[in-house]
Amino acid sequence: MSREDIKTMVLISLVIMSLFLTSEIWFETASIERSPVTDNNGFVDDNINILDVISPGRVAVHLGEDKIKLLNPVDGKYPKAWLQGINTIKNLLERDKLDTVETVDEKVWQELKKGRCLEFIFDYPFDLEFWGRALNLKKRGNAGIKLSRLLIKENSDSVFIFDGEKQSYHRISTGKNGDIAQLLEEIGNSDEIEEYTELPYSISGLTLEQGIYVPNNPQKISDIKIKGEDIKPDRLAKDFFNDMSIVRKIEEKDGARIYTDGRKGLRIYPTGAVEYNYAITPDKGEYSGDLFDGAKISYSFITTYGGLPKEAYLDEVKTVDHEPKSHIFIYNYRYNGIPVLGEKRAIEVIVTQGEVKNYFRHLEHPVSPLEDSEKLPITPVKALEVVASNLRFLIGVHEDEHSIKDIYPAYYRIGKEQEYIRPVWVIEFKDLKLFVDAVEGKIISGNE
Image 1: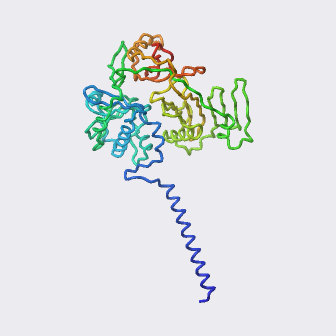
Image 2: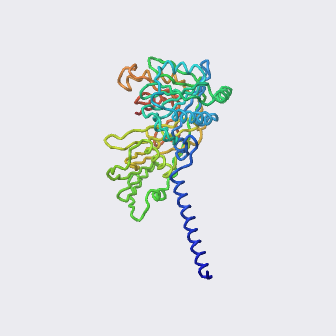
């Protein structure tokens, strides 16, 4: 064999080896994209961020003998408690079958709370199928059961669920829950976590639903100074439009600025509010209209355009009337674990056919307590008495026709010109929230 023949053979070998290694790289890359890493339970972390905005707003810790403590998301023991909750949801969804879901009476739930248990209270009741997708589980839960509250009892082989929309209670066998005894002891022995009381079913002629917890000794409260977002209109517009050369800019008399390319529109108000609109093309059928897909789209859009505020949470989801495959996702945020609410939502996203059709955002970021504003609040029972004396005037019906779903502290965004937010008691009915000034004891607003 000549020297040239040897060179040719070597060259061919190198080419074949190069092609082989290149194909291995491509196939490996494609494999990683198609199949995210999972553990033995089929749990992966590519949805993990959305768990931050759907986690429970409160955890009632029942310690026996009517002793109750309450955790909110900024409490030091909350992450450990919620991790227990996540693992329990994973466990029940892995085992969940229709024939293992047992409907139980409310008395069973109330009896369980006399013992030692954790009760997770969610801001919005997503169904078990949604939770299965959020946790990337191979098995998806029962779409017919919504998770308003989750109860984990010490040394129990079952988990209990309250569906607030149907007012139904369910027991699901999980085999064995994680050990919560140590966590309960840590919370029970902590002097930093306040004790709470469950209100009775009736106060001042008003009917209350079960599971309303209020502090035994409310702490002093203050108005909180706020500041708006620092908006640079032209810079923000560049985030929404790929080609600014075709974007028309309009200055309105009220100081608002409008940017549009004919299909997309961005309005930036003098108050710092931002509104984006997009003309959606007719439905081509590719988008399923799935609630979880819509939630992920809304979450990703917010994190890309403006970002999520600190302590943000997904507060409410609505369907859009007369518009198929469309949902409204409403986000709010907390300050030191306490919700910040107002007549306008902080962030609202409308997802239609898999695209964001409308995005509204108006945030006032809490900074610090106002000087000389610290006072003791009125009690939640006093707030109920205020509501009872005004309810017929406010709603125009007899008080006994409306049961109260919840009572909790919040901060209220009063109006456009105010530079602070006020502490309030929120009295929540099925379709109405009343805000009672927690210092002056008067109703300052109500919204649906």
